Each structure stands twice: as C-alpha cells, then as structure tokens.
Amino acid sequence: MSQLGIDWTGWLQRWDDQQAGYLPDREDQFAVMLEIVERLAGTPERFVDLACGPGSISARATARFPDAAITGVDLDPFLLEIARHAVASNRVRFAEADLRAPGWDAVLGDQPVDAICSATALHWLDPAELTTLAKTLAERIRPGGVFLNADTMRLGPTEVPRLDALAVELRDKIWSTSHANGVEDWETWWKAADAEPAFTDLLARREQRFEDRHKGRDITLTDTVDAFRAAGFAEVAVLGQVADKHLFAAIR
Ligand SMILES: C[S@@+](CC[C@H](N)C(=O)[O-])C[C@H]1O[C@@H](n2cnc3c(N)ncnc32)[C@H](O)[C@@H]1O
Image (tube, rainbow, N blue to C red):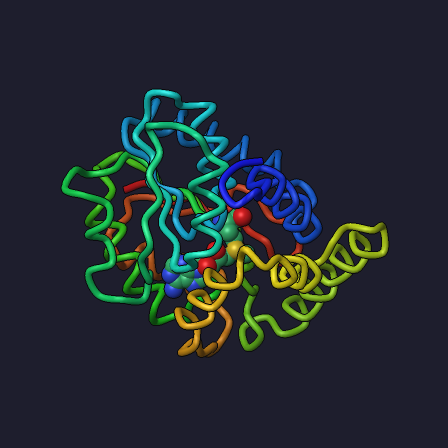
C-alpha cells in the first residue's frame, strides 16, 4: 500500500493476470523478448517500453538490465500512474505521449536507444500511423539496435481470407478458454478501476486522451513487415506466432 492507500503493485499484478488471459504465454514472451534484445543488441544502455501501460515490460527490463536507462511511453495517464508507483527504480522513467502525434519521440531524449519493445498495443494504431511510427523508430534506434513487438497482426482478410478467419477463431478460442477458466477480462478490470474513488480524476483524464480514438482497418502482418522495411530496418522477421499474435523483430 502507498499514496492514497492504493496497492499499486497489486493493480499491476491484476493487470498482468488480466492481460495473460489474452496472451497465455505472456510471461515467457517477455522473457524471450529481453533475451532477443540481449542476443542481438547486447545488454542495453537505453531501453524503451513503447505503449507501456502500467509498466509490465519496464518492470521485467529493470530486473534483467539493472544498469539500463529505461523509458516507458504511453498516452494513458492512469496506467502511467500505476507504472510510476509499481515499478520502483531510479533508472526508469515514465512519460506521457501520443504515438500518433508528430514529435512524440521528444520524450525519448537526445541519445539513440539500443532496444524498443512493445506488447499488445500497436494494434490500436492504423496502418498509416504504424508506417509513420516505424520511420520515427528507425531514427531513434541505433544501427544494430532492435525493435520487438508482440501483438495481434492479422494475417490479411483480403490476402488470405480463410487463414485469416481461422486465426481470428483460434485467437477467440484462446481468449474464451481463459475467461471460462476464471481469468479476469479487460472489461471487468476497467470496471474495478472505475469503482475505486481515488482513480476518478485519473480516469477522467484518460477519457479525454482517448476521446478522438478512431479505429480504421486492423493492422496486418504484411503492414508491419512493409512499414519496418520501408523505414530502413536491415532485417525484419517473425520469431514467434500463436494464431494472429506475432512476435515481430526488426534490426536497425
Ligand atoms: C493492452 S495495453 C498494453 C500495455 C502494455 N504494453 C502491456 O503489455 O501490458 C495497450 C496500451 O497501448 C496504449 N496506447 C494506445 N494507443 C496509444 C497511443 N496512440 N499512444 C501511446 N500509447 C497508446 C494504451 O494506453 C495502453 O496502455
């Protein structure tokens, strides 16, 4: 327990449990991501947790790379507040920014970064927004540095409609099995946050940040590969896949 009598670590744990319902091997996935960072880029000095939410990757990166300067970036002031309280390290900093906004990367400071990791977040963007984001990341990651993203990337409703539909069905089955087994879902987690009076102001600010949220076409794997190739990454590939969840890797 801490400021406002809130158990911030408990909220992060509850978030992790809820998110694992959508990505049952999430913990392993995070460990694999950090291992890939180390193998491809060495022990990072500067590491970014992109669309960090309440800081799940940052927490693990802090433990694995205790000397790295870690920056978590997200648009949600409420989730960032959890991160700031729950991820305790003087090497980690959380910054609010909208990845769709020009110049958002000013929050990363002046130095090039060694690695940027993201999970279950960039599917909130449109394909065009992802293309712009990839260009910005290419400018920010040093040569030989790495970008990793574990997220939903559709196989392609027009390119491979039957396989795409099957992947979505398989993904929905994973989710419904988790929830049938009692794992808390996204809506229930947010209802619980809404019910906490100490969060009222933060949640109102969150509402404002996302009020213009529009969702165009879902990002596909091809969109992702094309965006990072076009941005100038030297190598791009999928290193892991379950249904339409991909672990995408790009070397700058
Ligand atoms: C499902 S959560 C995942 C959070 C975290 N990466 C994790 O794995 O637990 C998606 C995150 O993306 C963030 N997000 C969505 N759109 C964003 C944007 N345009 N700019 C910054 N963050 C964004 C949301 O605020 C949210 O924290």
